[in-house]
Length: 82
Image (cartoon, rainbow, N blue to C red; front, side, top):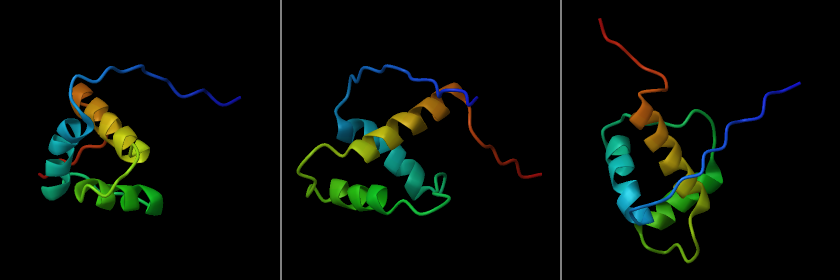
């Protein structure tokens, strides 16, 4: 039997663009990359920065929350250069 993923309820104190700023900076620094093809997510990301997104960019928002959780808890893959 598969374990069910943990669900965390979150409350935003910043708007979506405010939360996305630090994550966008991590992409710019090369600290985040995608393993696989996420066409719908990447389309939303492109529309989000150009303010063309009419609705709520659900995939982008989920990505931002996930990265904040990984960064805030110090989890996730690490690379150490020796």
